[in-house]
Length: 86
Figure 1 (cartoon, rainbow, N blue to C red):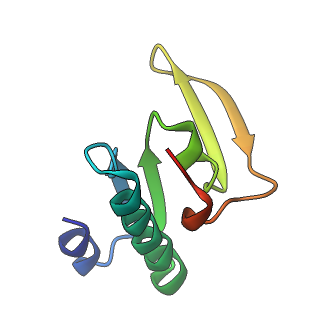
Figure 2: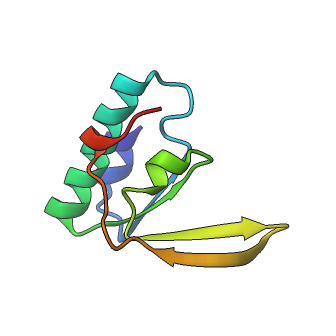
């Protein structure tokens, strides 16, 4: 699914729970691929997750409550996918 989406060279890649049904080791591989896509293609990625650990690798985390933005946080020290555990 990621390859099909990237083949169209999007400006923004929307990923809704890309690690939701994966074990931690496989999820980390998927996150490494997404990070590489961002770096090499310059694509911005919006990653929707309920996993607070995954949010630690983002530039910016936007919290929603009842469909509204309740908080925006910038990560001063982003984690790499290999540093994440869940």
